[in-house]
Image (cartoon, rainbow, N blue to C red; front, side, top):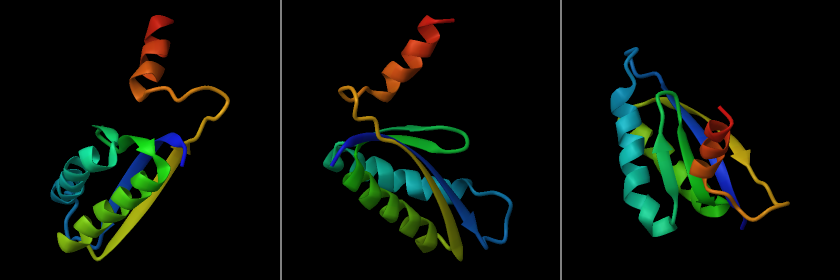
Length: 105
């Protein structure tokens, strides 16, 4: 499978609260626990996470992240993925994309 960058946005619904940090933390714990096993690099951001690695591995981990939110008590989870699958050049790390923009500033 291709090496990709994926932006993951998980939203727990039906929690009875406007705070979602405990659900995000549960999902992030899964990601951190599985990242080395699957060879996934990741960065947590205020509104989403960015994952870098094999697409099939990322799909598997995202599914586990969703399940962690259900285990935490969410009644529904809305998941959005943005996948950057570039095949005209060798894979670039997520940091290099940011570095490229910063170099032009």
